[in-house]
Image 1 (cartoon, one colour):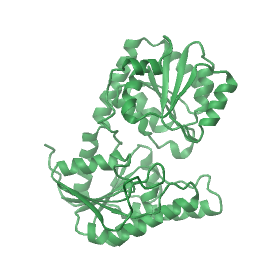
Image 2 (image 1 turned 180 degrees about the horizontal axis):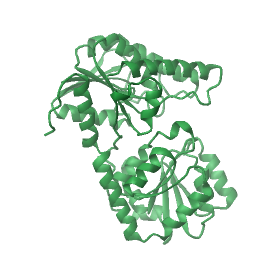
Image 3 (image 1 turned 120 degrees about the vertical axis):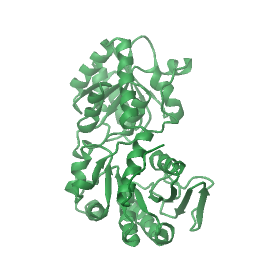
Length: 408
């Protein structure tokens, strides 16, 4: 097949799902064409050595990547995000018919940032069938009646159009299916395709002496949270839970984010000496740090839009055979419990999380290892790169009206 891919982000940005999908589809013999922007994530500035221009196209065996200019997307304001999304939509629309007009099917890595571009490109390509891989469903919750409200209304209208237009829709979490159906998708066209992680990096590892020294202070149980310290995570709950068990376990927070100062302040206020902060590390360092800890902590606040979301750190932990403690609702907790890969509790309940921390500390190491083994088995079975690409490839065949051939 000739397969088009539309993605706001693409490697060298940390966009391993569209990147690895493109490489794997090309390796399976398909001709793949990617339409994307110039790399600027997460800093919001075009990467050094790159210059935005109209005619930028690279080719490797069966894989072509066409990059188009866009307003750099690092601005936190509503106006800045709108300018970034709309500029990408305009640039993509100018080249889509020529670059993607003869593909058999189009895969869209569907983030809010891609929505306006997807709506425009699908209209321009006419009869080219599309498969959307929905990562986030836009919600108007919390939007004001000014700029944010108008932005949300435009985003919602565009999403409804593309949900109704798409030949197939893949959702990245089970509960997301209900959200996209409520937003206009035909239920018969919606399938679950869980995200995979970057398997070149995240796999079982043995911790070296440096990793152990960094993570472990004594013989106590170590629970690690690795990633963003932001509003969606609600790590104040974890700090309060750990502070109640200061002689039982350690909480190690690796990373940074908008809420880091607030979380550090709470730890200091509570005198939580068992809560430690480590600066952000390269992803390639993380498997050893995971292995040096006893559990990985996955947290999401109790917000409606997060109940149908599975954060990428869960797949990374499971792929590394790390036991998980999930302070979250909805799909995240259900996946952990179904795989028997760890413990879970309701979100934003520090007393319940403290109970899970205490229980985790009492579980013998061999049982923890078995939790990690079960989690990795579930990852390989349901969330791995081969499993995900098999499903996406099948949806592309279905969208194009072809019968999928068995994978070799």
